[in-house]
Length: 299
Picture (cartoon, rainbow, N blue to C red):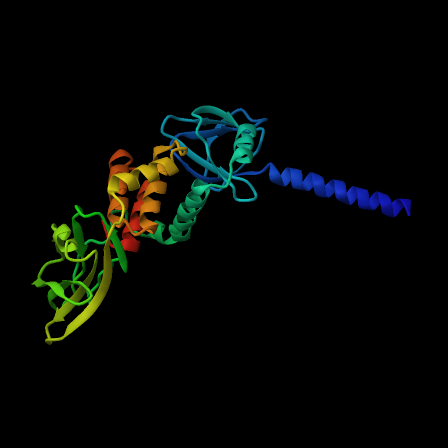
């Protein structure tokens, strides 16, 4: 009986010990810039790598433009805000203090999206996707729903096929066609949508391909809504929501994601333009932007 009792106690202690050790593991979810680690018992530093496991006894160095996001076993994310030297123990404390928030959800979404596309992104040539070209089939990527502020310009891009004669663009209310125009080339700009919004706050954009055999084929339908709130108010709300994210890359990508999931794609695009200017070689920025282009067709 005593032997069985000891076995149970030992098993419980081992379980507690294993859980404690497991909880101490720190996983690198994303790293860019100058981030190095000094392992206890060694005399050299090495570059921190994505998906690497860190220990509480590790000592890291983050340069001025470095970005490091880590997680624990429960997938709670922590943005390392401190530059210079930081210990593994400090990372664990930071993760422990992290609370469930919009930041947690958005960074999880961003990293999951990028990771799911990593194999195909590594195979592709670098550059901005969506360059117009003539292939076997007509191609257009545009969201089903688009929310706009009244003063915005709307670019529409497509890729013509070898059989495309012209592209027909229609803008209408639920009853009346407001614009019906045939264009050539691969790009059309709406510069004065605000005038159409005076008629109705919801518009329907239809794109047709006119082919050389005389047929007219519907290729996309987008519902365009004028925002019910002012742009300045919407920006203020988003800035307040993500004010605690200190790294400018993560802060702006989170804001762009927020705009995107609420169908304000042009506002998200404006943020990516700023990111590309400020961080032209940053992998996280380029990957996030390229995936945005693939999803929405805007660039």
